[in-house]
Image (cartoon, rainbow, N blue to C red; front, side, top):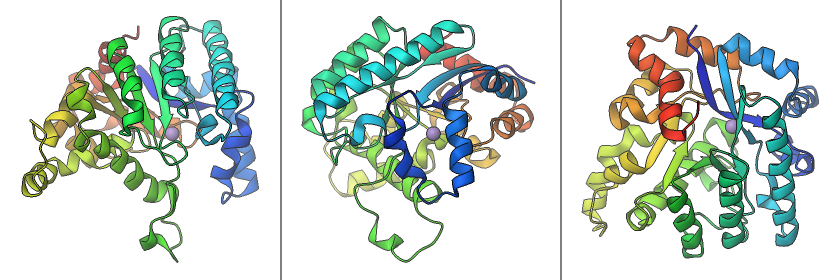
Length: 317
Ligand code: MN
């Protein structure tokens, strides 16, 4: 079993459960209770689960959407801060096993930038996890320029995690089983990342760093097409979209225990841009760990994906 650093491992800090409940409204109550139990556990059970999957260190991020759906900005700022302090205290108890991603009040871009800086510099977090749009505003909005400037200056990672779109796509009306994690979140999150690329955020902030789960939310598969269509439509960026995707984006294996998309991500982005994640407790960490242990790739690449790239990219030990 190869020792792993896992980058999309969830928890719920006190005060955030009310925001999470609607995301599991369509899940059976018994499953919901089991998830909540796992999310609020920072004890031996979480560590035992990590051990079974070969996860030496888990970078904990809250289960979204958190305060990003809060309509009272002052409340969002206070609750994000409290959540980060709580997580930092839990990480401090087992710094050998845990690290953290900050939770940010994206309603106020400057407050979010300040909290990001506090998370990185004072709480020693690896960056922040942002759960999709915030009350309909996406990260390419000009209002977020100061936020990206700060993130780039700090050379820290923004992990863009799926969340519900503002409204369900009309094409999903009347479907069963396609919403949320099956298809909807991937389209929403891939689109969000492409807004940043096509909107020039990475052109204006070359040091900005974005992480995507699910082996890149389909982007690695479509690089050629993005470049080809950007040319057709006269996108005026100095470089083709694939340039920014390769330079500014890294991906994790969260929720994707599958050899073909892994091969595609490694081929498209490079073996140094793919990291391990299990998405605990929404996916089975044991299955994710077993997949990376056994998938048919050179052992050197396996070790890089398991932990080497996380060490290099996020500065983890
Ligand atoms: Mn997740």
